[in-house]
Image 1 (cartoon, rainbow, N blue to C red):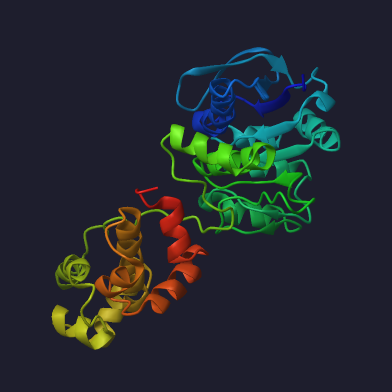
Image 2 (cartoon, helix red, strand yellow):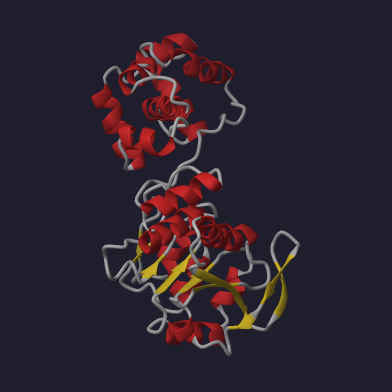
Length: 333
């Protein structure tokens, strides 16, 4: 029988619990699915810490390390994951850990990070010359402290099964992007059908491509200091198919176009045109996710007019086409 592949995850005080449990659950669920198919397990899961025993996470509860990275044989590990969390800063100064990571790199098949765990990898010199991502809030720090790292802040992960360099050393963005990374690793090991089966079993979106932008649903804006702007922001989502040019928006808000533009920049950090585009994109995403209409109808309802305009906007902001988005995220799938 083929030997189990060990997926090890580092833990340390104040680690982000979901950075650990999210990716590991993907591999655990793959074992369950194989059992349902009458197949033996494929993975062995392991938590590594400085010392064996309980470690308090940033959530307050404990995870228990069943091995110490000080004594483990790195060659016995197939995949090593470095999670993020508030305690990551201390680990970036842990010289012994950093030396161990650097020494272990040639011996493990895959070494990657989740969220701000990329800062630990960078501190160990493992990301020099590599493409890397991390949580969007830590991307600037990663770039400033590590000028040799090619920071790509707006993607989900950098794992590429077809690229020898980035199938060995890789990173992922904030929290749930670690699950996308784990699904990509699983697909590389056991094929896309197994990855999709696990995603469905865990009630996840079908695996998002690694180069897709880090995005979330557009949140309702903070209450505006300008009453006229506040009213306009409430009006825009209900009128996406209408003329939302600057002159029309200014007319609706009873403001001069230049004053309206200044208010948008001062309060939202972007001009009216960019804001409208984001709201239209978010509405289109939601319609496609709910599988409520065809792509051409979605384009018309959300003010893009034609499917080609919608396609260009999706590629610009999400690095994915509307058709691919529908296939991966549409609820009918």
